[in-house]
Amino acid sequence: MADVEPKGVVLLDVLMNTFGHRCRIALAEKGVEYEFRVENLRDKSPLLLKSNPVHKRIPVLIHDGKPVCESPIIVQYIDEAWPHRAPLLPADPYARAQARFWADFVDKKFNECGSRLCDLKGEEQAAAKEEFIGILKLLEGELGDKKYFGGDAFGFVDIVLVPSVSWFYSYENCAGFRMEEAAPKLVAWGKRCMERESVAKTLSDPHKVYEFVDRLRKRSGVE
Ligand code: GS8
Image (cartoon, rainbow, N blue to C red):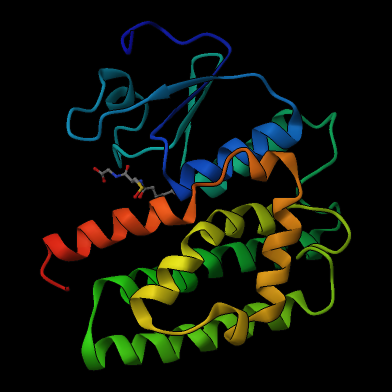
């Protein structure tokens, strides 16, 4: 199956993957039909290795045989390749640059520090928690009183960040704090996003994510 040359739109991914969820939400927002091919990361398919020879990672979107890699780039590609539905990025060049800046901030700061919350313990974890709460405040400052990061329209920054809502429960349990207290606006934004079908049908169950995180913590001796 994995060797069959892909036609149309194919997403190579695994089921519980925040990076892949970005692509699935973007495809759903654009109403694009696609084939979902589940990868085994312990035995990557020849198609994955051929499609992403540099990083050999999922997700990969293959459109008419042409692969696109790296989830923020895939989401932007989806926006440009299917322009008939509501745009995910704003039209104004400055607003587009700002959206890209915050999406990049999510990857470089939020995701990176969020992983440390779950991978560390003791003083190192306490320092990561303080840093993470600062990152949440910065994101809340950018969101302000807007419905979504881009204003009234659900868009690029929302798509890049929203899969992490499934991880909020794990962050809280690993590092001992309440997201509702640390970032009430972000929690409310997450609930608003979950009202969208594209998000609700894609996101992982937070308890399943925590089971996964807990298994990794036990395996690596953090717990
Ligand atoms: C990250 C993809 C990634 O880490 C993106 O698409 O945004 N910056 C990329 N993919 C992981 C799975 S999720 O943890 C992956 O493919 N890992 C397998 C490997 O590294 O061998």
